[in-house]
Length: 403
Image (cartoon, rainbow, N blue to C red; front, side, top):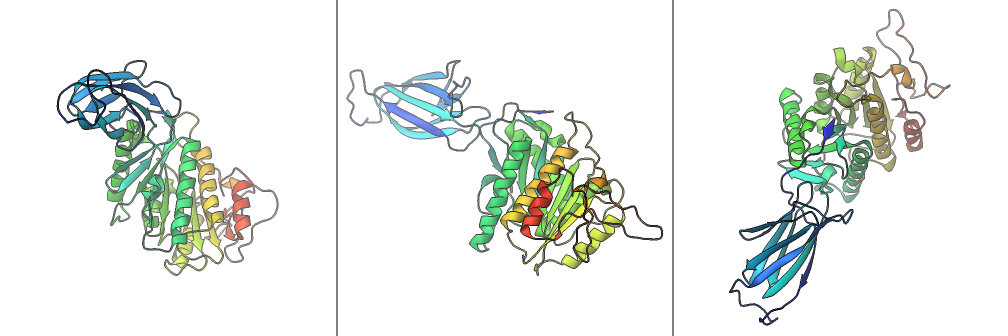
């Protein structure tokens, strides 16, 4: 079980409300910047619940106060003039205000929001608000600037606006998935990431750092669902092959290549999504590796979206991406947090034909044909193929089984 604990100072912006009143013998006119006849008091509360926050730190220069059980604080003997007031509290976004202290009493209240987004190095992390227990993590690799999936910042500055819009839709879907399934979301944009153990270690180190910053150090042991886009597809599939006991599943969106699997990695569900008109990557090579992995019993699904190229994506394929990932999380995570990942029976998929793209008719969940004697191939648990956007969506919604 991954439990939220207190975390270091958060540096994003929160709402601050300032009320100033002049009293005593001084004039309410602008201060002269001298003397120590000002006091500052106020209340710190949660913006989500309006509950008082105890233990918040309020800093003015080298003067520090701490809020009490009612959220109240007070600082006296402050210098008149313009000052920076900072308010921070573990697990909340910090607030900072530049204001003018006048002679006598000054009042400033703070309303702090729970922090969800953390940025560090070339990574960003999204920790869902209100999640006291995290069950795992999604690691997103691009392709696009994957940290933007967690922060909402730009992901593809050099590409047309419609590509950016599609990426932002995907990012919003990933954050919604993380919130609904109690997962952390890590977006890593580490440059020059080869497919190998060193990249795996860097990703897991970034996940551990996200746990440290958010007060969930147990994230360094969390199971992960890895999403690889374009040039980071090889690392995503490679991560799953090298870390099968920790990988919930892998989703490979228009990858430049994918890993050939063997051994325990064959039991990790994966979804390979290709664009029919993609002229950036080699769909033929990825399809060949898919067929090879399926012949060995890998729980892989493949879909080819008609009329689509390499960049961005349609609303349908983005919805299909997060829907399939949700199913993978639901079926693979153990009943008791910290246990082993659940093994998926390959009979929970559909049969598909890679030549005709036809889906087998009959019940929604259909048994996979056994390998025929003397045959090096086996039927694919494919839900997808050369489908319309509507069919892709229906394939992800029709049955809880992995396709």
